[in-house]
Length: 619
Figure 1: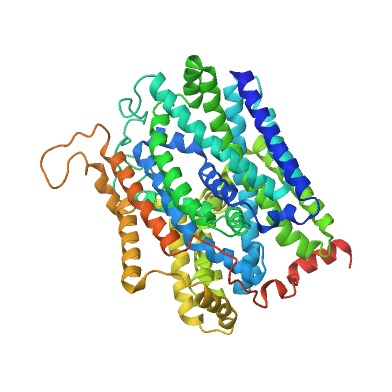
Figure 2: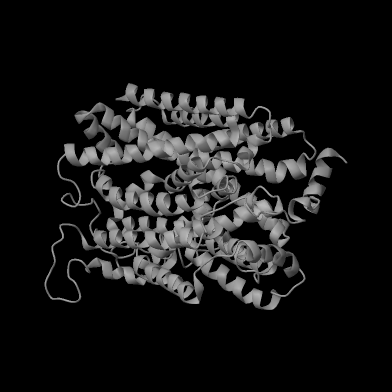
């Protein structure tokens, strides 16, 4: 199987290089398009690249391992993809419009310009670097480790990491952002086909699987039930939660971490650079909310039940039946890490080049010089990621754990730009600081640092089985609401009102009247309560021992799995309503007019950057 697997990887790399060469040839007369694809990415590419980056970004092999370790309670996290789809539809169109109206090209520029804050620009750039370096290094390390396992050690782990990294770097440095999105869209489609095909072949050729074959959870863990609404546990590393860690509060807060994927700088940048059309709505409703959520909920238990000894066991079993089937499933698991790692490294390098290097460090570069700077940035980023993945995978995992929960802390700022004109700069910055501290001290970096320097904290990771994203967002949102009460009428309000007045005049959201507006948000909250919140505990027995009768029902599948699939089907119409009925998933160039300010305002480097550059250059 090893020669076939390597042949498939080489073929994919050659295809990616071919696509990148075509893009480079077509865009040779527009050097700056290397950095953003000319802000006109094809709709189909933006759709499937968004789905691929978000699904693969949650570490697909890691998700399968969680389902194998904790059973259906961990599988419930798949419903969090629906919450991510709602967040994407809610903020992406308004961010796209804000950039077009203000003449801006990145999420950091849009938020910094809207709130008049350099700190927000720095926060977005720091977040982009977290995704581009430790987070991507963890994914690349996992992909390299899988390749080494699947080849039986014929390719050492270090060589696998550097080889996969080079395969990702080559098309990016040739074709830039447009080539990256096209390649990831193609690979995302291939990934979906391979996962579905591998699961179907395993079910038909290897005998009965889940639910006949039980999930291989350890003794004491509930395989087919959620272990309560919350557990008053001190957290991972301090106390073992009885029955498993995925209570309903853990699931809800874990879903917020999944929202962090769609609010990451790379995914926001992808939406901003897509051409006008229905791509944002299609990506949110059908790719994320429909297909991706459904595949996660359906396929994860089927595959995890056969991976008691790790994924290589299932791959080898399939290879004995059909070599191509085994190689295809192995390719899917490796490809998931490659897709996510490549996307976040490339988007992070290009965003740092656009938002930091070109305006502040090397201003006045020619378009050709800007393209060269971006290529150098890509080379440095991939070298650092491969080095981290090879030599410091533990450090990468520790610091990469901050990326998703910190990313979701940008939600109040994005809602402020999109809908809430009364949210002030002071409120956003206060919320970011408090939310970021809550995340830092409920994740490994903060715990390791504090306990190494001072004394042991009474809590570990995710105390009370609440994900750090939940702790951070609660403090963040509370601070934003409180501070906004006292600062909502400041002088900066006039600048924010110009954009919101333009939204109200030309891009009003059509909720269909007060009654329809109340109904849609009420139904969304009810759905979230029963699908992801405390009401999800009813799913443990609702379809096996219904509360309205004393008889027991026999569905042939666990009640919690049926509950998950039922609320997946109910959630899709909610996302559809926002995206299409309320037109939050549709963008258009008609009626767009450029507002003064934004990109027209002169850029001035912050004093600390100017002082640092003066020391280095001697000026």
